[in-house]
Every structure is written in C-alpha cells, then in structure tokens.
Image 1 (tube, rainbow, N blue to C red):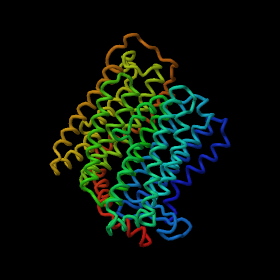
Image 2: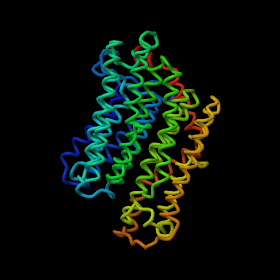
Image 3: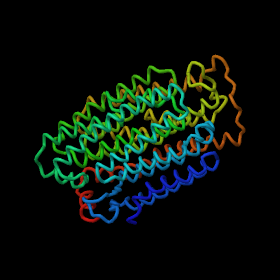
Image 4: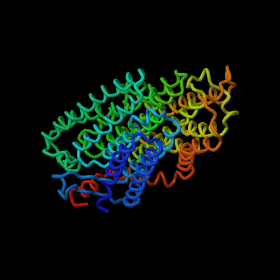
Length: 498
C-alpha cells in the first residue's frame, strides 16, 4: 500500500516511453495510451478506496522520513482529483483516434498526453512545494508542445501567450518558495503548516501568500490573470482543448485550495476576502465574455473562467460547507467541461465549422449528439436534477449561511447568464434550420459513429449519475472538506509516519 501514491506518476511515464517506440504506428500508440490511462485510473481508484474512510496515504521516497526527503501524500481531495484526471485521459485517448490528423499523432500526441498526465498527477500527490513546482514545469512543458502541435499560426500565437504567462506564474511561485525556505528552513507542506501555525513572520507569510495567489491564479485563470486562456485554448485540435479544459486550470485551483487551507492561515480575513473578491470578478468577466461570442470554442473557453470563479468562491467563503461545494463543483466541472469540448469537436468533425451563424438543424440530423450536448449544457448552467445544480446549490447555501449576499447574487446571476449562452449554442447549432445546409464533410459509418460517441455518452452518463446520486457525492466531498478544514490529520500522517 505504501507504493500506491507513486503509481499515478510511474504508469504514464512508462506509457510515454513505450509509445515512443511506435511513433509511426497510430493504432498501436492509441492502444497503448488507452491501456496506460486505464492503468492510471486503476491506481487512482485503489487510492480512492484506501482513503475514502478518512485515511491518508503517505510514501517517503527512498525511505527518507519527512521532512528530509520527497514525500508523496494522497488524501480524499487529491484522490478524487487523481481519479477524475485519469478518467479524462482515458476518454480523450479514445476520442483522439477519431479527432486528430495523422500528423498530430506522428508528432507525439500520445506520449505528450501521458507526460502531461505524469505532471498533473505529480502535482496532486506532491507533499512539498519544490516538487509541486517541478511537476508544474513538467505539465507546462508537455502542454506547451501540445498547444503548438501542428504548427498553425493561431496555435503558435496562443501557445506563446500561454507559455509566457505561465513562466511568469512559475517565477512568482519559485520566488515565494525561496522566501518560505529562507523563513522556515523547509518546503515540506506539513512542516510549513506547523511553522506558520506557531506564529511569527505573519506579515512575510501574508506577502508570500499573495505571491502564491498570483502565481496559481494565472494557472487557474483567475481575474484579471486569465487573458491568456481565451487566446490559447480554442486553436488546437479539440482533443487537446478538451484535456486542457478538464485539467490544467483545475490543477491551479487544486493548488490554491491546498496551500490556503494547509499553510496560509495567518491572516484568513484578509486573504480569503481577497480570494472572494477575485472569485466574483472572475465569474462576472468570464460569463459576460461568453455571452458576447458566437463561436462554440470561444464560448466554452471563456466559460472555463467563470466556472473557476465558483470553485474559488468556496475557498473565499472558507467554511466546511463552502469547501464541500468547491470539491463537488470541481468534480462536476471536470466531467462536464471536458464533455462539452468533445461534443463541440464532434460538431466540427461533421460540419467543418464552429460558427453558430453557419450551423443549424443538427437536432434532426444527429439527435443522439444533440441530446448529449443538451444534457451537458444544462448541467453547466445548473438546472436540476443535474450535477451542476447540486454543486452550485451547495456554494449558494454556504454564502447564505455567511450572509455573503453580494456573492450569492453574483453566483445566481452568472448562472442565469450561463444558461443564456448555453441556450444560444443549442438554439443556433441544433434547433434552428441551417441558413445554408452543410453536408457532412466525411460521412461516418453508423458503427464508427457509435464508437465516436461512446466517450461522450460515458461522460454524460457520469454527469447524470453525479446529479441523480448527489447524496454519496456530497458526503464524500463533505468528508474531504473536513480533512482540509482540520489539517492536523494531514500533518500527523506526514510527520508522524503515516
């Protein structure tokens, strides 16, 4: 059991290396990527089962005890993030075989996907800040190449903006790490939490916390640091964008929740008020930008921003219920947002455009695809009994409990505007007749079409299940939030030998 936390890192690394030996064989690469992604998912599920009762899995690499060595830690929060991330890798690996051109496969899509997943998983299990930084750089390198894969001008422009802003983010993060190490003499998060709780250096700790908020805020897409995202996410193939939308900004959000519940507790009124203000502005700016667009990719891309605002709302309110809502909302948005991008890719695969003014009539042509899109779109908007409703309801109830009325009004208004923009996509692309009928670019055989829809149908079913069986999901999120609100268990598991 002690080796379990390292498996989500080793498995994708091994898969990427083996895939490189079959660089010219598209089918073998896809098969290997799916198999190794399933292996990641199996390891993540094993960890989820291990920690679901409140245990925390700890591995000290090289048998060096914390805080002297590298420590990998998995609690209930990181276990669910590992599980959902691995599931998205499985789904995108399957979908990419239909979506990507041969050139993208030949240039290393599948090895890069697995390397990126190694970085994502490493960030979820890192028990010290320096290794969290290292894993961020691993996923940044792989994601930058994935963004530029194909070498088209819009992709290169978006990838340059992406890497430039993320390098700034990494510089802020690294500078903050240096200051913390100089102050505390350690980068182990459990020991840092102890040191900060003992008092002293409160002003310095608050300054470093703001540096981390800026650094992780860029990665998560918080206002006003998100402007790289709408330029970077739409241009790549939709398999790439779907993976990014489901995971990259979520790793930033995960890191913010981790450090601001475990380490930075010296000035909660100021810091969490700052986060709450940023969350509100992020929600408003994202949804207003989405409402103004008439291109499916751009609408979905800027909606990533507004949805991250809901996650940060829970952290800003900083109560047991609000963190429960943040975890529930993260799980919901990873599934739904990935699925919406995959469905948008299916529309483009059929009609060759994302422009809503050119689309129409898909409900009659492709009723299955239309129903899948409608369910995911309404879940994003928060209609009952879908998963988005229960996640938003939890966050709004947390706001009501704390009498944060302005934030509650903002959350409700943004939800209505989200419904407007999702309804706009449905009305233009699926319901109204096409202004100029567009034939399918490449007619897809029925058997192939069913296989193409399977990943999207699976994610839709998962989203429905999270809504219909919201009780167990809520209870798990509630228990995970309890661990975050009471970090003594995390500290004891790491420093007390697990």
